[in-house]
Image (tube, rainbow, N blue to C red; front, side, top):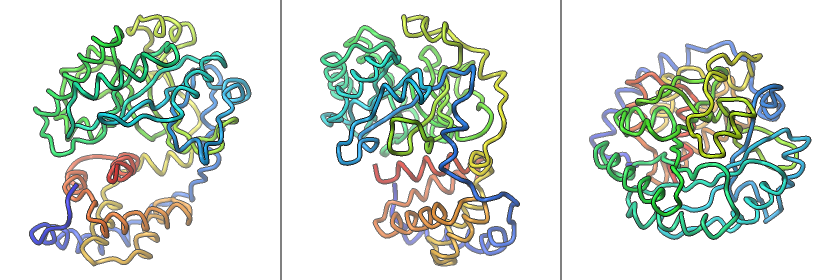
Length: 357
């Protein structure tokens, strides 16, 4: 992440002129999204649905009611954040992993990777956390969303070291979680990891195509704002690319199990996901306009509202972007890459969400 330098301000200023033309005139006709309804949309009969959780699903330490999540909530699997970097542990990890397993769910754990730190140290720490905790039925996961200054070749080498060490320490082949923009732009759409299962985040109505050399997704994270009985906060919602029997096979170690379900996925569209699956170019330009002084915060909020966000979410987006500018964490290089690429608003939100992590 970079502060706005003197030279980069020129880039922003150039985009700002386009912002005033494109952002404030090209207004899509999409009704405001209702974030509260998405959890209901995600409970699809006949599909294998699950959640992933971290500490922010435990506000004030309040427990998750995993029996309700697995029962009325209709969720069949859960991934729980275990660790981050070389020594941070989710204090709720063991409690949530055990409770989810006791409720009858398939359970996995994930590690938020910090590429600026040693991959072997991180892998061993992650393994120590999960090896000493609840027995897991799903693969250990590398959550790869930031590059922390590494180029594609360096990041690829870092990733390979981490994955190999996790497998050596746990005896289980890991899975990779990432999102489209990151894999295309920061991993150079590497095909070197296709032997590992893929869990891809893409906030849209229909399943995304695999990235890199993968021929299928194993899991699809479809939303970050779902609602599930038993969890008091918004939660990430996921679908397994297979039926219940194939999930059993996958959990038993057959990581090739599944496929064909998401490829034929057909459900009614969610209005919220229609917002997130739009091309993000004009909204990125509006953000660059705010960074370059061509727009003010209320104008960015209005622009976000024009793309279908409800007033609260639009205001939150604009306020958060202003915060990133103030603290020097707006990911300017990534935003320019997005303008030059073909990405969705959901990709933009994932990028911004990781800017201060």
